[in-house]
Length: 286
Image (cartoon, rainbow, N blue to C red; front, side, top):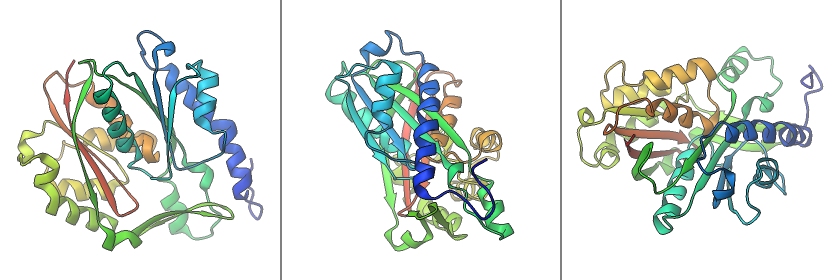
């Protein structure tokens, strides 16, 4: 209703929309978790988003709406784009390794569709159809349950930083996404494959949790690492069902990894401005 031809909302109105809708969706995400011991045992809260901001922010909204302890330690990871979820997992892992009693709640909330920009260009309108809204929530502890986060590796191709950007404009946030991104991802993965996989061959990886930034991105990953056609099916299915939900998307793929039997080695990765690839190795535990 608010996106009317010739009168699309400005950034302030879009941020108000985010402030109304994001806490509702984020609360549903948290309520869908099996917290075991309830919210009173949560010691840390990490929230990632790149689609809306205010202060006080969604972190405090979650504390109030979900009944989290007021003493909970809060961290906002903002405006990092689609790879922020892996940064959130990395931070959560650091926390529980330094304090094994910690219980870290990670929430990835993105409302990408509110940044629809008025355009008569068919190509721009079609490219926007890739995006979706979503929220993922995860609990990270030192307990041997679910998925073990083994290691992380980051690639930043500074010479390709012009290929992707996400900027605040007067009429919402603007995405610049070059058609060269898949080729750049292919090149980055090929040249960093040993570091990403810990000198293992791709055949040693049982599970792949790749951020589905688009079909061409998944195709580039498949070609770069010479993966079997079925290896990225969980990512392709998330893309078909939900679209690209920025930082929440790879967590939807990670949920599918929980269905695998214990002892499976997996590789996760997500991409964003920089040009950046955040990667991790994980193992199913139970």
